Length: 88
Image 1: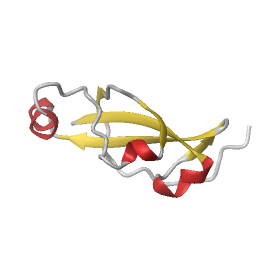
Image 2 (image 1 turned 180 degrees about the vertical axis):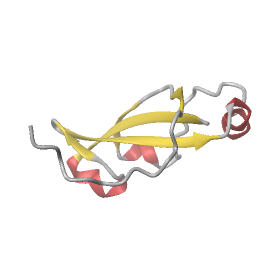
Image 3 (image 1 turned 45 degrees about the horizontal axis):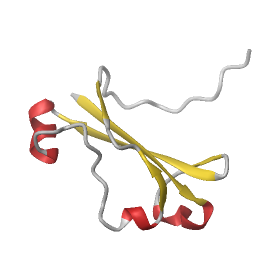
């Protein structure tokens, strides 16, 4: 399993366009996509699998986007159960 990661930022006025978190003056969001392997990523993106996939309408509301995505092996796909924070 491979996780493809892509990040971008948008102005506060455009926050409803993307799920995000506050990051200074802008809102930052991260897109994680899971693929079964590099062949699946190539089928989705073409020969240059690291180029960012940005919807045609997105640049109108984005202040910044990563030009390249990164790919990482996903070692554990099990459901994580939320637990109360540990008291130190």
